[in-house]
Image (cartoon, rainbow, N blue to C red; front, side, top):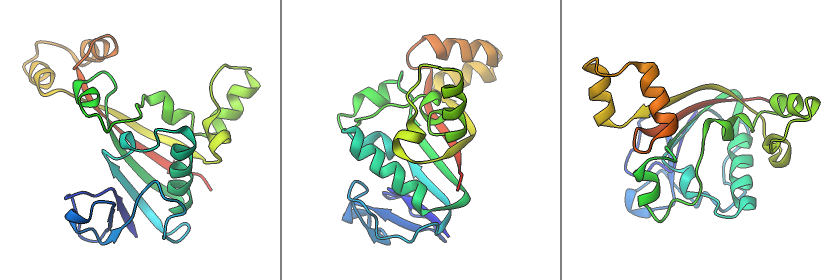
Length: 185
């Protein structure tokens, strides 16, 4: 089964489309921050959260509860696909309902394997996987660039490496992060 969590109007055939906004007529009307969710444990091979997580969990405990529920409902080895606005893009800061920002490191912190390696190295990171009791391995993280920068890349005005460097230091270059996580159970 597939779960489109926070589907909004992007309802997908063959998926359980869940949202807290009745106006989009989801298959399942639910508030993502009210846990536990009315969903079976390990029921979904693919969970999609497309521009959802940035709206969730202004308080860390609420965010942690949501991440535990995502982990709980995802099947062992299941894919969790997350799209969030890039923290250095105006689309993140323009919406007052955005309460949480993400970087690639945020998702790496959700790996128990990585947390154990950091503990062994006495590294100074928050051990999110251990704190939240979740375990995800990062499969892929892609930066989606703002249209203006995609045009410059396609025109050969800038190389992909130059674009990555620009995105690391400048605003409004990377527009979105698309993350794929595997549930470790």
